[in-house]
Length: 438
Image (cartoon, rainbow, N blue to C red; front, side, top):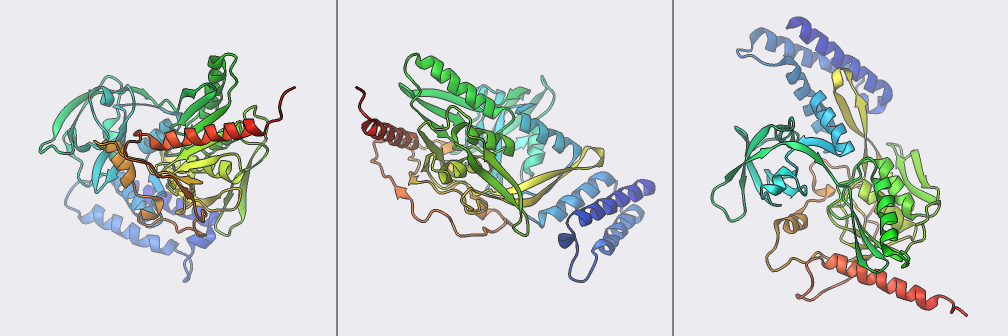
């Protein structure tokens, strides 16, 4: 064990030295090099080896020490064990074996955000807002999100028992779910009226831009002789995903011009991403729906379409997750996810902790019997509510947004209804201004 401790400690020193070369300002305190302070960690490990009464996993202990160190930074910097890094890559590709639940931590409880359609959890009747109190033999009190996800995933065909507590119930009930490959359908489309399409982008995973283009082509084909006249692009409840896919989706609807810039600690531009303006849909009338669940890549798309004047935004202020995480693969299959920069919209606004403001603010109206997902979305904390979040570098960018109101008899999806009405109005106005045909 002593040899193994030494090797782990040396790896930690080497990793710290590498980070020091990459980011010397962060790596050095005012009183000089921080590396001698790692001697304290080495001494703690040595005392554990000599005197601790119980057995322990030395590798897990070092992993937990690194995780604790990164928790002092911001909510999105983290250390990924080999298993966690593998799951991270699976999520980006939209493929994994599990029970099909999107979960989060709310009021220190593991809470279902939504079951993935046609997944084991959805077929078993798990509902948004259900609290998962037990996974297998483990209580979920104080359980981290990554650990909960790991316990629910596994090989296809294996079973996992979960206990869920539903609002209004006094006792939890148990469900046995059989794991299976779960595929997240990233794009869902439907016709709202002749020539008008509702395009719901759920997540920015791999190939989503290609799926958006395919959905638009399919809509054109389904219209027959009726041309495609406009799109409601729905980015609500979209947690984000891959930057490159966000840029490609924005490019589907944008003329040539800036999409997003990435700036580091000193404000220097690290990368600029732009649309080439070659898409056949770059002038298609467009309204974009956002809400408090629109985050990260979804905010990049919304900000680019707003600043370029390509779309009107409808809904509520977005989440405000505008920081950039870079993945540093480490030896043994682990990885470091580190916040290294901030996103800036084409007009120079910082998304971080400020979010994207809609042009027309429309609250989501609850039906008479509020469903748990809608309630959860209304109660969802924003980036600025997370402990240790990076503060915004400028004031909220909206100024004032127009506000729409509704009566109590409105449809449950009032936001979509308003977006459709606005788009229809834009189309009528454009038609009225068009020159008369001889």
